[in-house]
Length: 333
Image (cartoon, rainbow, N blue to C red; front, side, top):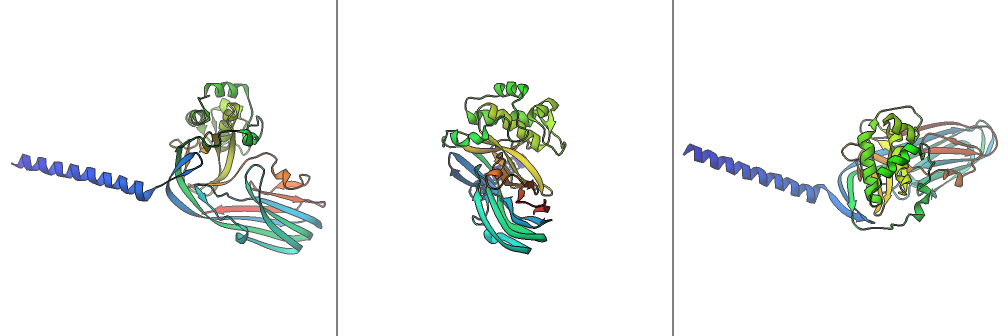
């Protein structure tokens, strides 16, 4: 009798366990995640994260300057990243010794969003502070193909160049590898190439300068910048438009991070080969995208003669006079 009762009790708890697990799964599907379609991709979005993002540029002209321009990359709104459409209300400018200034936002030829701040008649050792404060909602997500969308690549020829941006180089060994990784279509090629880089290139922090793709392949290791450049090169060698995304990683502290975006038949798909478990088709809520690299696009907005980098996401251009002093800071938490 005891054995029979024990068997019944065991069966009861087994059924109860299955029911609870099934209920938890259904709860997650209906309440813990969101599924939606954008273009040719289906997004499965899970957790969200609220981030207070601040970027600050401090400029001191060292001589009288008639015109000074600051161009700042602004995090874009994407299917997985919510940002205010109009960022001007979130910009604060403090000027001492400057006659006037104006602000505007523009989209670059590469599809990035920038804030352009123009200052007129800056006196020697005047002071300019530009602060951009935004609330960004990031999401963990993954994508899957839905239907081919805008499958032509003519509009993305900017992201097929064999030698731009830095690190992208059609090295002989990289070209041989690219041939091996060529798939039936752009989605298949992108997935195979991302998997190869994730599994064969060891993540290791290297020098501050981005390595050439061939060097990373030969070394067998590299940091996020190097791995993104290698994957971008492999994809471009196979005729897949690809670009290097620059942003922040919030896993511990906010630090700069790079990954690749691949233009498949279904749209742009992220590939972060530093993540062993999700190296293609998704990102975590700890990623903030600020912009993607598109060579020389800033030169189309401002005079390239007197142009300096004011941190990884901002540029300062001035007309005549000496180079200004520039300090830059970024934070996200």
